[in-house]
Length: 420
Image (tube, rainbow, N blue to C red; front, side, top):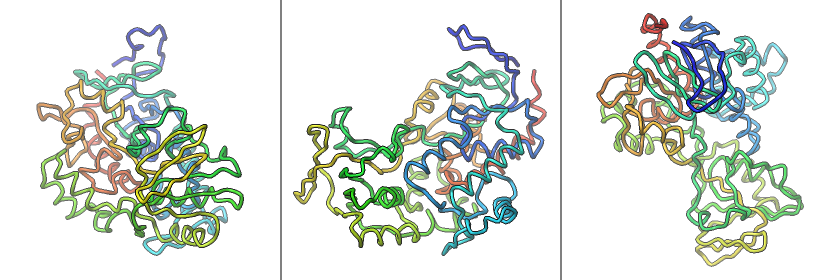
């Protein structure tokens, strides 16, 4: 198979044809690349990782944006294959103090430790040599492989692994859509958001009652700055994002598979199992301590109306309270991942989709099925696999489980990966 420039492009692409192209260089994409190399499914010259922000760049930015200092997951959840790699990395460098006790499971690493370990692993596997610095814009199945359209050219390979997150699909309150574009309102996950530019004396509003809102509020609190947290519901404190039974991918996942694939029933089962908006105890303790001081004020009423007024935003709550803010930051979670532009482009392909655009995946392999029921050469990891893997699909543990299924499948199909 060969690569050729995108139609309408004058650029020449000299990269050799890979056997596997991974779309996404986050935790899932990096872990999948390592698993493929470890299992000898591919060699370095046969692997491409399409990522515009550098490996783990998006995850690193999100941690920085909301002030994450320690991860929620234990030290066994990281990008390497060996579960104890991060712990051994910390011990070997005298950084045991960067592993913090947890009420559930193993100690939690600091973000600095997590990313330093990840950089060490990436360097050991020379993954930077596999990066294609661009953004995937579409996928098209061909007779003997997959064509991946990117902003820098077309890549034709035998297999494509889709390891994207939410693709910028964030959830905004309805009132935010009524404001002009230049209103001082943003989402915490907007790539342009930078908490460092917040003025020292600004009155900042944060909308949300989950872990991200809590961490952001505590991080930006200053004696000279007024921070109002708009959390309409009581705080929900949970150590994990779902019950531990979902972490073992056993009977409870098998019961999920009894429901029709890519169906509303499966989606509802996953949503019922997930502790959406929950704050882990360590983060709630910090929030409660800050609330007891003068750093943050809490508004329990829901915002119903917002208006831009001379570079500020005035919000009116359901209880009649009105607040004038210099800046409003929405920490209201992600939207439907299948509404992202890349997933929308799949609607014009033979790949089958179901409820709200969810991909129809094979429960045993994570292959995306075609409209005729046959398996495609596109395999999926990340948030888009939650109807197969359950509520932990988007997490690091979901990447590890996806790696098991995908590597087993590609190992069995290795002969079919020989270029025509």
